[in-house]
Image 1 (cartoon, rainbow, N blue to C red):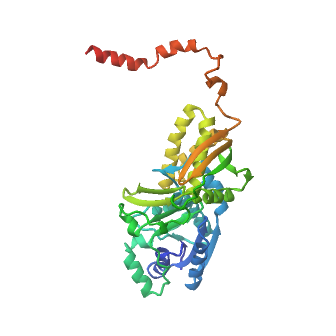
Image 2 (cartoon, one colour):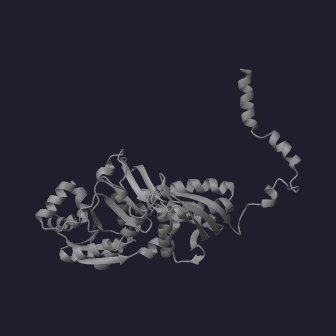
Image 3 (cartoon, helix red, strand yellow):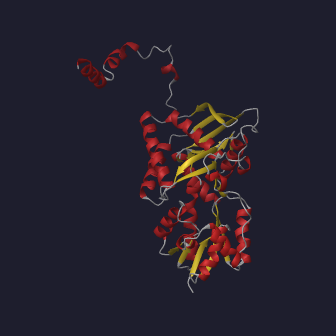
Length: 392
C-alpha cells in the first residue's frame, strides 16, 4: 500500500481527509503538523487527534526558520499585499517544504492537503510540492467536490472526531492572524470584538501613549527599547506591544488568486509596527531613486508570495537586490503608539543621507543664486506643451 503524508491541522477538512485517503484512495496515511507559531492547542490537537485515529504523526518545529528566513525577508521587502502584511501566504511555502522533506524521510509516494478549490492555499502548497518532489499530490476535498455540510455528514458517519465549533475560519502563525467566514462573508457586517485575539480595540487601548525605539541592522530588527533579542522574541514582543495599543487590525476585500473577492480580517500588530519603522529608516538612508524602485520591488515581491510563487527565480533575484539595498538600512527609529495609530518621532543612522547644515535656511555654503538657471529651465517640456495650447 502506498504511503501519503497529509498536512494535518486537525480541522474539519484535514480530519475528513484521513478517512477519505484510506477509503477512496487506498493509501496508508501519515499525518504531519508544521509549527510556524500557531497557538499551543493547535499543535497538540492534531497530535492527539492523530493518535486517537491511529495515525503515525509528526510535529515539525519550524518557528525559528520561519522567523529568520521568511519573516525577516518580508520585513526587508516591506511585503504588504493590498494593504496588509502577508502572514498566511508567507508560511505556506515553508510548511510545504517541510512536508516534502518528511515524505522523503518516510518513503511516501504521495502528499495530500485539505484545501478546497476556491482558496489560495491549493496554489501555494502544490506549486512548492511539485517543484521540490516527484510526489503525487492528492486534494480529496477539492477532487471530490465536497461541501462543508457533506464533510460533517461524512465525519459523523465514520466516527471522525469533529473539531470544536468555531464561528470563524482562523489561521494563525508568528506573523499574523487571519479571520474569515460565517457572518464576516457579508461585507456590511462589522467584525465582532470577540473575533479578535491579538489586538485591543481602540476604545480599550491604553489612554496613555507608549514610545518605542526599534533598532535595525542591515534591514532587520535587532533590538526593542535597547534590548537585544533573537528573531522569535523580537516578533513576539512587537506583537504584544503593538496589539496592546490596537495596532494592526485590517478589514479588506481581498482579491484571491482565482479571481474571487473575499472579505478578510487580519491581525498583524507586530508586522505593522516593524514595517512602519523599517520604512521610516529607509527614507533616511536610501536615495530617492532607490526608494522609488524599492516600491516596485516590494509590490512584485508581495504578489509573488501571495500567489504561491516563493520558488520563482524572480523572488530569489529580488532577495539579492533587496539585500544589497538593505546593507545601509541600519540605525534606530523611535515611534509613538496610541489607540491604533503609529507616529514616527525620530530616526537616526550612520548611513543617513540627511544633511542638516545644507537644509538649514542659515546655510551659506550652497549659493542660492546658482539655482536660478536650473529653475528657469525646469519643466521645459511641459512649458512647451502649454505654449502650443495657448497658440491654438
